[in-house]
Amino acid sequence: MTTVLESLNSALHTALETDPRVYVLGEDILDPYGGAFKITRGLSTRFPERVLTTPISEAAIMGICNGMALRGLRPVAEVMFGDFVTLMADQLINHAAKFRWMYNDQVRVPLVLRLPMGGRRGYGPTHSQSLEKHLLGAPGLKAVAPNSLGSPADLLLAAIADDDPVLFVEHKLLYTRPLLEEKDLLDWKVSDSGGAYPTFTLRTSNIEASHLTIATYGYNFELAREAARELMYEYEIFSEIVLFSQLSPFELNPLFDSLRRTGRLLTLEEGAATLGWGAEVAARTAEQGPSEVRIRRLGARDLPIANAKSLEDAILPSVQDIIQTARILLEK
Amino acid sequence: MTTNLDLYRCMYLIRQFEERALAEFSTGKLFGTTHAYIGQEADAAALFAALGPDDVIFSNHRCHGHFLAYGGDPYRLAAELMGRATGLVGGRGGSQHIHWRNFYSNGIQGGIVPVATGIGLAEKAKASGAISVVFLGDGTLGEGALYESINIASLWQIPVLYVVENNRYAQTTPTELAVAGSMADRFKAFGIETWEAASSDVLTLLPVAREAVDHARSGGPAACILHTYRFSAHSKGDDPRDPAEIAKIRVEHDPLTIHAPRIDSVARASVEAEIDALIDDAFTRAANDPFPTLNVE
Image (cartoon, rainbow over all chains, first blue to last red; front, side):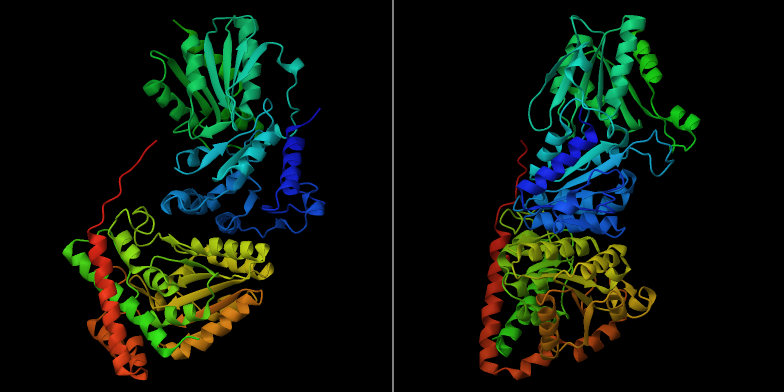
């Protein structure tokens, strides 16, 4: 049994082993501590020259990675909590995202920024957010998110091999999750779009006509499966799940294929729903997708994420929220 | 070896280019904005005389002088200012956002500093022997990213030279309203070797530039603070300074006037004629080049 954490850690070991251009930078990433979430464990012992622990200087970390990438290295930065990406926003939006196009395609900026996002651990308003939506609309940035179905290691290695800057959005609750095995997916027929950042489509086994499509990414795939199971057994509502590895740029054809079968779309994300990932998916579905798709978006309420569990649970989307929203979509 | 004539040629080229660029604005051939380097030419001439061909330069909004001193083509810079397809970056960047060989510029104050620091780290990692050079102004001293960067550059002994050109005004704000304490002490506090000069004489600046560059090349960060004067407005018309003040600094601190008497007048006239023709050709040719079109997949 391999966890998402072990998978990501192994990818970093592999990248450092196989490519001398790869550097890993971040706060508190040296052994024996090995990073706040232990994703970098063991790296500094094996590759002390290329694993660089930094001061608490997010803007400089990102800017230094930009400079390294411009000059032919492949830096991988870890921000301790994804919430701190706001301190890197200038470096991402005005530098990393722009260099290639602004310099008329004469340069490349091959870097990865790993962003541990997400709540449900009681860390409160500034250590629990899913802020990726604020960066999804910045032309020149790519955003991908691992999940428990695809290989997080392969996804991270693909991001490191990418010639453009990639935001690698990790949900903290995924780290300890085991990668799914065949026995975990008996209810599902799984297909994928292929490519470096695949989109997975899960259809209920033995059911041709499902009732709705849940579009999601990252950790929320765990909630989507749980909700789909309850919808099936309790309400005889059959779902397809379209699980994205690539958040932006938006590539929605696998979703549109599913929507041609179901005609109902529920977008699910953990960031605040307003102007979020789901909003763009919904808008593009309305513009470019099959006609007459009913749509609902589900995300966090438009509030900071509270510390108290009772409040946090009420603010973030839950399995019951998914079920309730799905049932609304099914109403005549 | 850099001769007096070489230094004059560099400064005269910058002066003529910038005067022409400002003039072209009034004819409508240039749009957007530009930040003239007029008055600061000795800084670029001295520093680039001290730098090597593989060194990597990151400049800022006021980048034309640095680019020309680097050896960049005035024609391709003019074309970029005019938004032509033949410009340095095909019209995508304009005045503040250019790239050619190891020269880069971006229009974000402070944002370029960590990038240049990362460039220095990359050159060190590759053992290329090149140093990274980044140009700041007095205004940039207000940006936090600078201090994050110089802390790391010192900790990791990155070969990067931080050049502060203090032209005494951040747009319209005089340094007295924006910069507390000592400029040099900012760098010294992080353990960075720092040089400082207050002169518009390129021959005074040259040994200072050489020492600072040599120090960075020996493996650690260096800072070089050059107190200078900007004769023109920050960009185009935004100059609330007293005209008498500007007239006075033009008389007392013009790097060309200071340096010209050192050169044989015949040789000087010849160089000036050559550069006048070069600049005229650059702007005339660029003005006839096509505008870029957007190709979307």
